[in-house]
Length: 286
Image 1: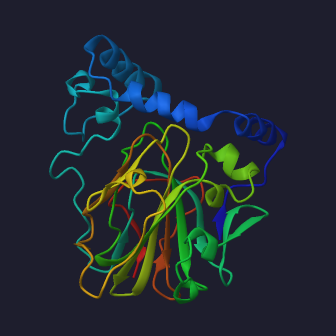
Image 2: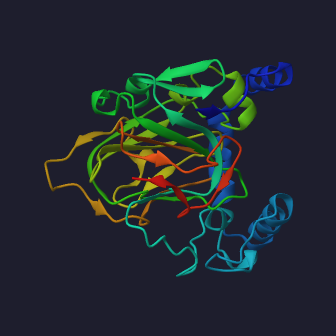
């Protein structure tokens, strides 16, 4: 098990201040600004994003930040074809996104670890879906910073069998908040997806955050358009996506939590909290 360390005083002060912010209002304002096509605004914002966070656009669809029609289009940019070849090993579990590992390991019954000294129940994370098949399973939590590629993909081939949209807050999911805010991922808005795979049921949970006014899926669009969505699919009726295919995207940064059943994966050596990963990189072997 590897996770963020225990919170220190600075983390608690920053987290307390953030909880007082009107994050919904801020996110709505950001939503409109990020989608403005006005060249004088979006070009300044796009160049600022690249310079401030050191975005690497060498693998992106467009290398020129001003080629994107809006700030949000740059943030949710696609990769150019062939930029991320998948491993040849069919048993390789690949990272669903770019980001930094926040926590990785195995569940203790239904308990996942958020940070040192903070656990939370899988059944609550899944928004009412049955957590029993995933008890004592494996999980990894990946944080996407503003500089990361913001689409998320299938870590292995699977068919969608259920999804739940869980309304909630839009607190920051930056490392300081993960260390200091107990039950952070349970407080925030999230879209739970459950997949039938060759190793059994697998959950992929994108979690919203401040300025993430929308999580989108490739099969349903913006999940906020159907608040509280609860859908179970008949066998064979849900969308099937192969390993590496796009599942959806964040409109600005957030976190992805991946949960697999017991005995499904052996995590790769060196996969620890604080390690940067890229979509398509091998996280472990099925």
